[in-house]
Length: 585
Image (cartoon, rainbow, N blue to C red; front, side, top):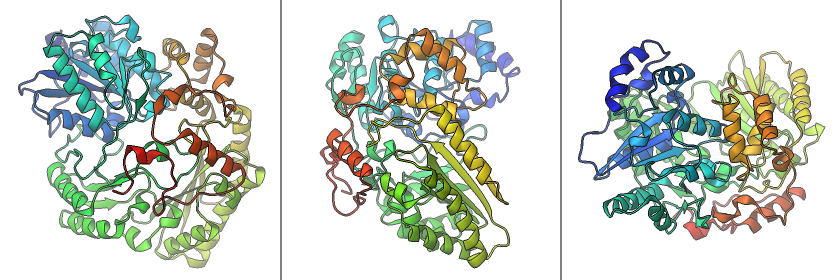
């Protein structure tokens, strides 16, 4: 079959858009012909441009290829023209490197980054000729596993997979791959392999429903990080070299799943990061270098690091790009000359009362001082990010968003050195996510979302202000999937059969198809968007992600009282993550 794919691929590439997505052979490709005892394929359920931008899969891909006896390949979700061409010719979905069908691999993994990718799991399995449910796959199919950020609550898609990797893949994927090699060498069955996999840290086997604790790489300075990476064949979403400063976040924003999931907080030393940056710039030829973390401004040696990076980048004529900074961590000296004349801030809420509810820990004076500093340095473009539908939100909180925008314009008139200021305002809809203090909260009704967006649209008709908003209908589906249980697996399959795929792409998302899928399967959306009782079991309780349920519940109660919790860069707040590893070690 592999030779048939290779033989017919040239004619297919002439018929599809962006054929560079499917040819492979990128600069920096690892050795695919080395002695191999285990061949793995990492699947990313989105297009090439998105998947090639994902740092997590990049790390795991190169890590496995740098492992003796292991070859790792990639597969991305093909666009619909390629899918149609494969179906027309009776060809399966294949890997980029050697054009193998997915069933020809020893181990297949899916990296799942966000909820609206779930139907693409079914899409890729269907194209590969793989039954959707693990229970329907016999020994002729390789074990198929899942990982990525969405494993905080794997239950909606758990029945699709033989195993789900919870936590840092550098640890549990490496161990699982070695275990599978040993099991194959000993002639053990897939079921025997899964029995043994239950004993690995951070490996949840849905058919066994084994309690598991998230796997954590405790020392990022010693952790694997590739600096000889693939350079894509075409432009991708984040087309630049990237270094990862640290994992975790000390701030404790009560809506933020990532901030709690990636604890404990683990930093890389500046010397490690400078070395990685030099090697990435030298090996890839990228003209831009970016820094990756949940809150870059909280990296404790940011000034030292950026000073060193600027010197190295200037030598190579590479641009250093900083991501958005917290308002209270803005340091103009660091920020100057790294992003040109643009600035991105995320106040999240329009009033101090609501910022205290969500534990944003940003005061009015922080906002004012940071913006004045930016204006004095000639910022021409300001991007502001907010959330609507937050718990306890009132109309005055929405008015606060408008007031902040007007205050930015006033500060520009008083302190700005540029002649023109453009302001972009973006709002997303609050989605109650597992492993947050707001995991029990209700999502506001769809009608209320639309009303709030319309209210803001009308009041943000201000010169040089552009208002963008996240689709309310997609936010409903995302909330359903975020807190979903195993009853949603048939809904995901039905939604795919209804035509749902690439749901995170606005032009592809279809709310009505999702609602029909829920109705067909006899599942109510309100089951997942309602307020949860604090004493009811949560389907993700079997997964120990580190932060304790009692801590999250206490934070919820503090939010209702308008009480904040300081960040944990100083004193530990005893969230429970320390049992996985000490913060800032």
